[in-house]
Image (cartoon, rainbow, N blue to C red; front, side, top):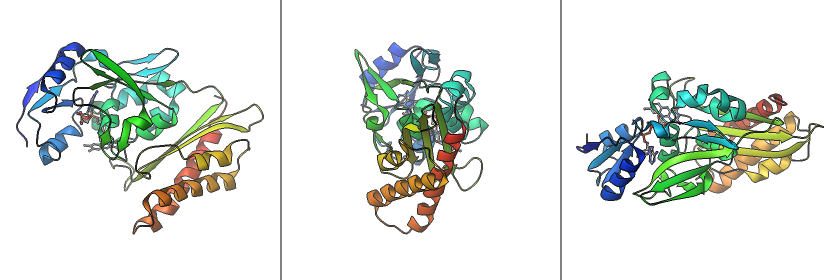
Length: 289
Ligand SMILES: Cc1cc2nc3c(=O)[nH]c(=O)nc-3n(C[C@H](O)[C@H](O)[C@H](O)COP(=O)(O)OP(=O)(O)OC[C@H]3O[C@@H](n4cnc5c(N)ncnc54)[C@H](O)[C@@H]3O)c2cc1C
């Protein structure tokens, strides 16, 4: 285990002051479920001398309903999964949070940690991209907002600067004509990191025709993003099972065109087609809530 000094700031300003003072040699800790493993493995932690434990900053543990939904980075997976407002206005995110790890991991692990860690398999990232979430980054004396799909630049890579803290995640509430689907594939039903996941949001008009669709696979593309080729197939149609499958095939084509055909492709290709098809079917069933 790497040796470090631990700071426990009592408020946001104190945390930002510490980050400004020790940037480059400090890392933030929220729930610690990813960070502790990295510290033990000493992976990418060579310059870390200070840990800033923000887990006591209750001001960052909010879930608020305004014009949109605002979620603080310290909201735990359990809080996100069980929040009535998230379940009602962003069910795809609540469903994804409820699949993370085990009850212990969900009680400790935060949505902010999941996003900033930016693992390709992070379960809340695909739903948040499908919801077109933006993240707020604050440093001493300033702040900025970034769309989540721009914030994450690659596997475990983000645009977070060394002196910045993520302090908010916001997105529009899903309207009543939206349905959603979330599917994941892992080696076991529980306590297993996803090999792949897919988040789907579909909005339909009063005739049942698709007005808008977001299809976002996780652990499939080099960075999280919508597969517009798959979405376009659905828009303007009343999709049936065959069209849902064709959309799944479009996601598989996007995966192969980004990464090429690899040893894992014979496994991943049918898997991502089936996951996407099922997520679309789930989204079409959860309609007119
Ligand atoms: C047994 C086990 C099972 C797991 N299963 C899953 C799973 O099924 N699905 C899944 O997606 N993940 C899973 N995880 C990974 C992990 O639990 C999640 O990614 C969790 O949400 C991380 O949150 P945390 O608060 O623990 O983050 P931390 O470990 O505290 O932090 C993670 C990273 O984010 C940074 N960070 C955290 N908060 C902020 C902030 N507000 N501002 C700036 N930087 C910040 C930290 O510096 C660190 O780099 C699992 C982990 C374990 C150990």
